[in-house]
Image 1 (cartoon, rainbow, N blue to C red):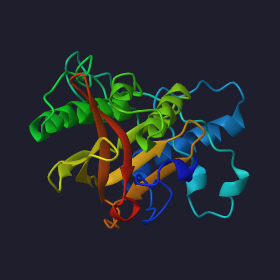
Image 2: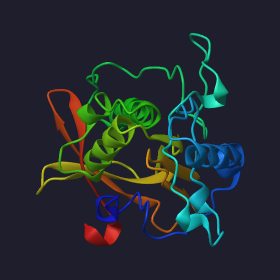
Image 3: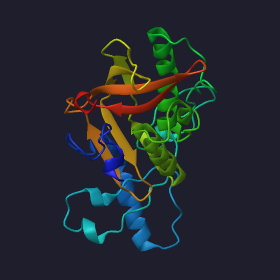
Length: 241
């Protein structure tokens, strides 16, 4: 993953990368079993649930054991009944995630209107993270934003057989809405609220980060307003304005 794409998301940037913890506990033994089976027979059938690489351990022999490919299965190790939401875990992505609004809504050119748009966007944003379907989230941001680049990564992650665990966001406003007359854009200070991000690649690689450094959680979103629609066009720290 190119960490330069996600300056504010900082998947591989500031903050501590933490151990795999519960995720390995859930899947590690199965990965060992599959690796052993693969070495014993080249005709072994692929698992229907996620397999996390045994190479994640500190064993000196780990590097000589091929990492088994992660196969995306069902979270909770079974298909959830229709309509029952089930969060993602080490076995597979979230199931029956409620769909966000199909199209952005028109809201007034007020702080209240912006906040309502942001609620819609966060729903679309978190839907994208849980499903890989970013078609709703794309409609709220311009192509040169970090968020747009993040959605492209999420699309590829799921297309290649990976998925995300946890990784959901919420945002709260930290200032009043301000209009920059010279640039014809709005801005508002926001705080991104999150705890843990886990991205499981189909090749067995796992990226996990805990929010141990909150110094970069507060920044400004920049917006345009046109014909009743708000759109996110950029994000900057205070010293970048």
